[in-house]
Length: 217
Image (cartoon, rainbow, N blue to C red; front, side, top):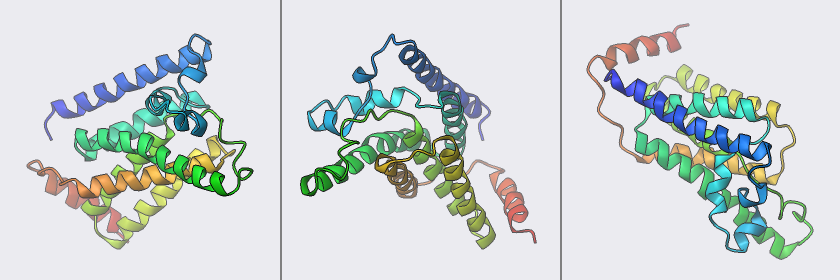
């Protein structure tokens, strides 16, 4: 791998994390009204589509683990996939996954207005859907690179572990949180659809050593 790439990856993610951190600090200090940043099924239905993007600039509670997770998973995703894949997964995971879940809630609301009445106007912010999509990218890349059964089992267990960590920080899940499942699936789909970059010289030896480590009895 080119020496400049890891440094660039860290710089990009650090810059994005700093921006999210500043937006989060502004929101917590009440300098930026949450109603001007957070999406909700009602707001999107009313045509305020820009909130789908601004809602991804503010970390939800607990804000520090959220920002740290964003940075760590972002660097991991950029280490195994192209930048355009990571960006596409982030947009799809945050925007498209949200629209899918909002559409589902809207369809249910058309049949039974009491089913999710408490969620229609609930503010929906955070970086977690982006993180979920990036976990999907990392999982897909490792699934294709390390094809042994043991490696695949460890891959699945790692994804489950990430989900449990998220649940430990935010146990009060609602139907809106199904967007994380959709975001993960979109991350996997985008990474699987996008052609893999050519392997750098010498990478096969590293991959072979990792494969042996994963398959060792």
